[in-house]
Image (cartoon, rainbow over all chains, first blue to last red; front, side, top):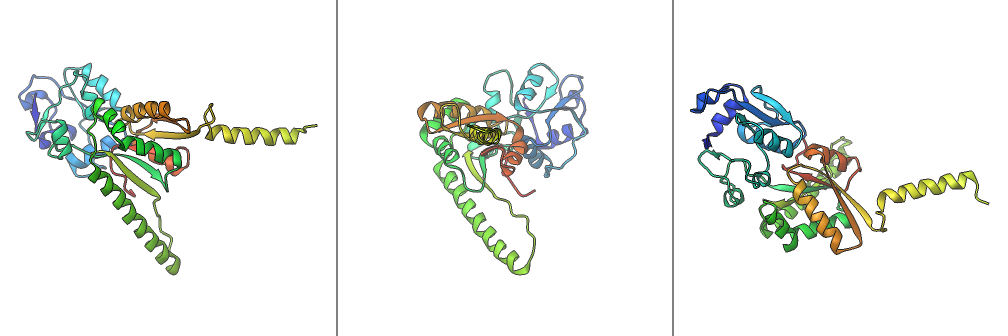
Length: 201
Length: 88
């Protein structure tokens, strides 16, 4: 199996396609692997394939707690399918299938033509402490991005970093405006203190 | 003469500072979260720690959700996330 469509993946994970034979493969039941709740990888997968991170997936046979577990489960089976971070496929033991006829590569991840491409973030609650800021600055510099490339991650462009910074500023201004309004109207609003800093596209 | 009360106060001060400082006296920075980001986070931490003495970064896995919960509850300083974080 070298290529699947998003619709086929959706049908596998929703239990509508149960056997590899239905996709032109051997007569073997499909062992679909997913991630546990709390996984950002799971949320991205469900949103991209089903349109909602709360989608039900009755076709799943097992839920893994990490990318490493998914990796081991797929490598140990000839009937398993799963989703995991691109860097985990770099070891050569896994074969990534084309999705909607797009082959996964650093380029298709960077330009988002690969359907399951996503940005990775470091997140703070409020302003970062000096140590956290220094660490994030290191990752965004050439030394950090060199480590990213060596480990199968895609280096980030300055424009994406700047966009992330601008988004945080916009969110903070909006929060301040809402806070002033809530003070006037005596409303209780749940304001998140989160700031996200993209580190890989 | 140091009393028991002063000893207990000193112990609490020591434990509080222990949580914020590494063995060599550098400030701790705790990072938890996505298993996708973890290989990058951990290797960057190892290099970062080796090139400066002001901060010591430790990185652990716990999923994006676990990382976000930890920073919101003050148990760590940075979360690693493999998705955009939204209010829901």
